[in-house]
Length: 64
Image (cartoon, rainbow, N blue to C red):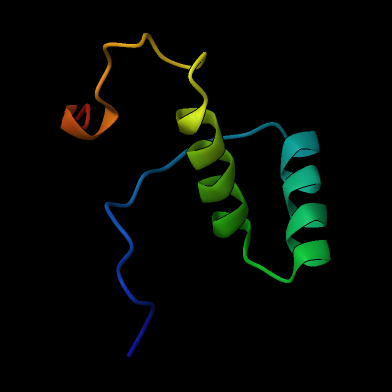
């Protein structure tokens, strides 16, 4: 059965102290580490200061 697809798989390397912080947040909130990372990325992308005003994030293709 497996996990439901959410989107393309990406691989990211983090320093161990950041992984520990992600795990603490995930445990506290009762969600997966991946869910914590997705939520943080969504919050960052939603901030008007994160990207120039004319940037359409949804129109950009993934870098491969």
